[in-house]
Amino acid sequence: MRAKRAKVYRKALQFYRQFCGFREPYQVLVSPDFVLEGAAKKVNIPDALEAVLGGKLRPLITFCGIDDVRKAEGEHRDAAIAVSRGFEKRRCTHKEPIAGTECISEILGDSNKHHYILAVQDEALRAKLRRIVGVPIVHIKQGLVILEPTPANTRALANAQEPNKPVLSEMERQMLKSLKVEARGAKVAKRALAPKRKKKGPKGPNPLSAKKSKKT
Image 1: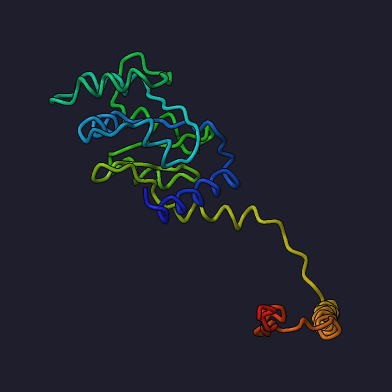
Image 2: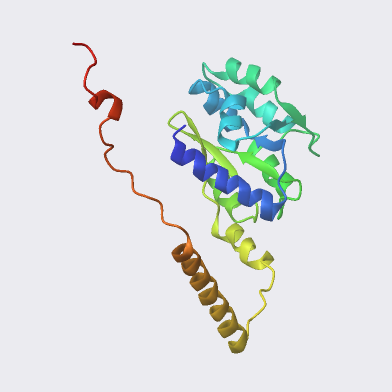
């Protein structure tokens, strides 16, 4: 991963920790289409997610999601099943399996109270998840796991949770300005009084080497 992208991801996760209550190990709810895409692109999902999120995590998949993976067609189905077996199972309320993406949508509801990070490929579901405040979303693009930018409705939490800053009066602002000016003046005066260091220049010849030889 490029250093610039890693920095962006760290900043995003820091925001989710500070304003949304996320903690390690991160709970990553994985959709069946994400598992199938990972198998098709030969992505090591746990390792790739850990690299993107920069911390320990718990990959989770619902029983409906497992059913979707098992019913999938294509040459990568068996590899996807093997990968999904390594994930923790997230119980849902469905006695009869429904679509894995629909199951995820029901689990989240209108809020993300369990602080899930969603690993989803389905664009319609991702668009719906972006409307829910505090839902980090990752997907696979060209064989790379990508963390989506923090949506505007989630970024607004920073302003909503920011404590009210005290408003300084005009007199207090002038006093603060005067103190800063005095501090700068004292610093300049201290530098002026400090003894000046002698500049290093070229040294003269060694007097011992300049003496005449005693040999006759």
